[in-house]
Length: 106
Image (cartoon, rainbow, N blue to C red; front, top):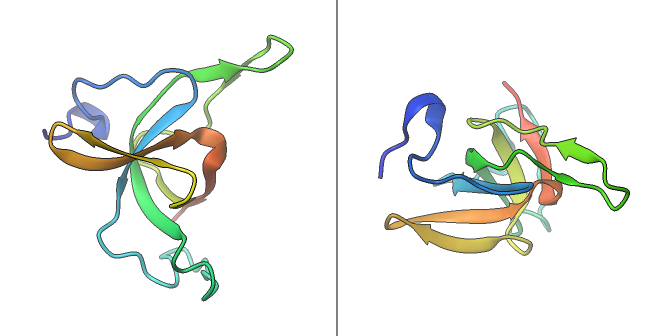
């Protein structure tokens, strides 16, 4: 299924602070922003694009914390903390916003 307006995955609405990420085909050792991925981490870090994200989650004190990411953000995340899911026949990674290490800018 193609991405709809603003790069959102049509027909999917994430809940809480969950993020749906389309993995990049080729993850380089150095990101476009110049972030150097150490050799030991090259096997565990992936780059991808956020295609759907929830609105946020409540803290243990009951305070609502809005998500900081936006659809279209390029992010770095670990392959060990995400859940591989198939949506409309395509593979994605699903994780909590706090499991994303960085937003790649530039």
